[in-house]
Image (cartoon, rainbow, N blue to C red; front, side):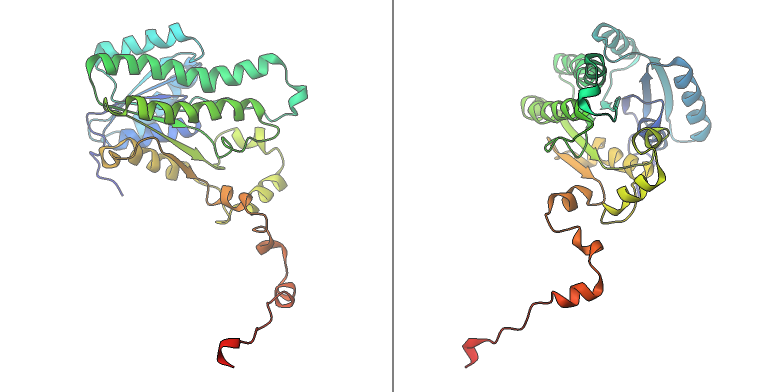
Length: 290
């Protein structure tokens, strides 16, 4: 789908790049020629991912992988990491992917649970965006930020309230800075993914197989998304091929959000053929022809 040099000479940082969607996107960016930096809290995970991706993308055009242990909740640590990266070469693209979530009744959550999720998702995104943004603006560099949100940023969602609060903030940040920084050459966009099977996530948020089946039934396409599909969308949005897209939140969920928004849309899978026949509207005689 893409030319192998689509992201050649682009320097990209992916937060939460050691696992899941971040890891899959890092691989795709490498395949397209980028210099990719990944960060996360666990050095062992980062080292393993760096080694794996180096092996997988061996021979790709100029793609290289670098890892940096960093907790994005710590603004000082983030700035130090960005300074280290900048000393080699300025970043062109930032992908804020680091996330945390917990499925629980809200009254059972401690304040620490809220602080952890909001700290990673919202404050972590703010820390990295400001650390890069200030440098880009001072140096008058063009750049791209891609934030990862979710489909429930506008509606909220029961049982994942810390995530809903944090992701809504990220969406507001995306659209606000798209306007404020757009005329200075910095584009801001976001992806709002629906269910995508990733390492570990489904076992935490969908602990029983029947819950997975129920989740698929809520998606018009009848399946979950793939990490490859996500990575391809991310590659397009950070590339020069999407240079006129700014402030957009691209929903990638197989139509799940739209189906849930309609009061009667679930009937298509619930009513039998006989019931549909019974509900057929009766023909009304056209009075204009009498």
